[in-house]
Image 1 (tube, rainbow, N blue to C red):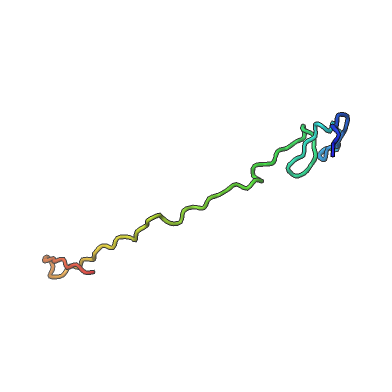
Image 2: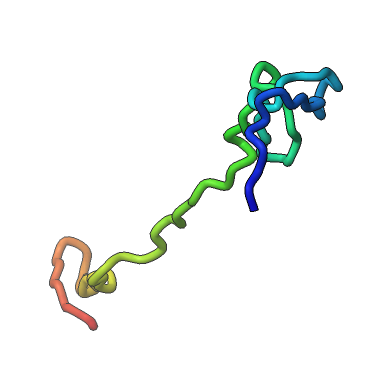
Length: 85
């Protein structure tokens, strides 16, 4: 189906209610049909941005190294290290 070119057509703005040439009208993101002088772009805060989650684990992680416990045995001044596991 063929459409008219709108050479002489007029349209009424949804924002101001004023009459403008049809060829100068623009449809906004919210569906409003407004004149190009009244056009407001969509605010960036309304667009969802892609967020990646923080890493929760390490690749090839190893448990903490367990140091052998040493116990000092003997009289004061005489120290002998005996390793205990």
